[in-house]
Length: 130
Image 1 (cartoon, rainbow, N blue to C red):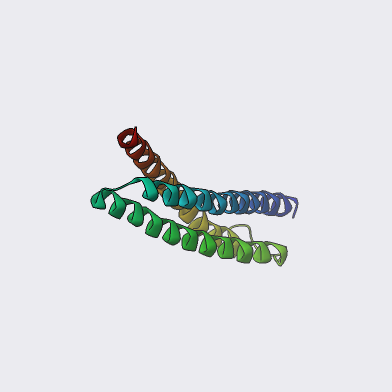
Image 2 (tube, rainbow, N blue to C red):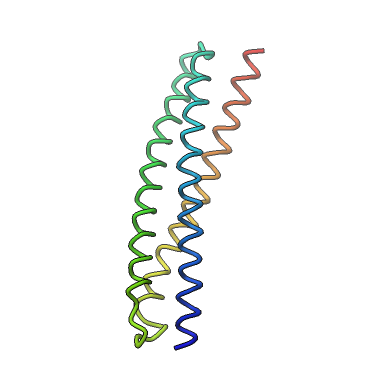
């Protein structure tokens, strides 16, 4: 029973950490959206404008993915709070944890790739402005 309490405590910590990170990323995407809107005013090249619009679409997709992951985290927290202490640690909670953890890893990797691409675009556009 003590090991189950420790496991659930660790699991809760992981989910809470993911939720904080996802909320930060959601706000960060708003900041990037503002920067894209500012950048498109300076950019006259239609091809570069299309790139910027593409990033704006990717931000909307990213924010939707964040919302879905936050919903899954909320559901996981409910499952943790309603855990059956007689259930085996190798049971449902551990098996349900794996897909969320894998999806968070994939999301974080894709998130940072998107950020790097946007930062490269900003550098590229600024270099042509000056």
